[in-house]
Length: 327
Image 1 (tube, rainbow, N blue to C red):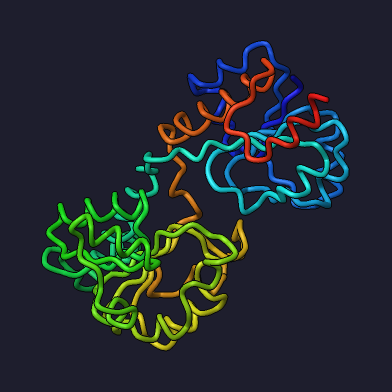
Image 2: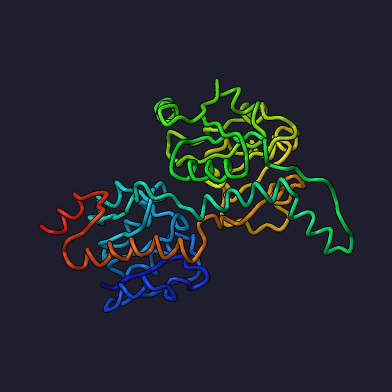
């Protein structure tokens, strides 16, 4: 196959063992990110297959309608950035392993790294030290504090395990069905949504972004958090009502935030008000960016490419597109 890999910013994938699975295929790795649809279409016209790097590129109908040679999109996990209907209309097969039961430990670890960094003021303490000063403030111990985890999925459960290891009291909030599963598993569920936001020292969000969960966290939710509480989001920015987090920090409820995701990415404005807020710890969407996580994810993705090339595709999201190709 003539295969394009998009958005591999640091040309990392070809250094991983899993890249060997593509031996025999004509592979081009693109290390930049093209947002202009027409420019991207011209780049991708020659290719039979495209490998997506998470959600770094939106695959819209406008793009797909300009790619008559494209037969396969291969990626891993959820696909809110892909127009599946347009894929099917253009007879393009989308393959995506949903990896049931396997959390992203990289994302869970990064979540807890942000919690620790905020609690102990690590970025600000480092900046003070590098400026020729000594301590700039007093941090907080996590032992005995309360963390609320919004969502009862794989990553949220992993974060809960880390929090318990640090001696934190863990409670959950989620959909009604997920809250019931949490209770069945012996976990603590908040008495109400209001109690979840108002009573916890830390609130961390771990929910997939879908049309139903967009704007899940509202201005009213954030306003109920205490002035000394921390809000953490390593999932998706779209889960929070647009503009609500910055407004909440300005209002002092919650007092602090730590995020890895933004409404528009990449953020390249050096004076972006959210990134530069004095009570914010921010990282550039690196929750999943580890060599180990890449090897795990792209091993699955490249297996999908190989299976398709051998005429036996796996993890098909729109199998009707494969049926149309086979006719």
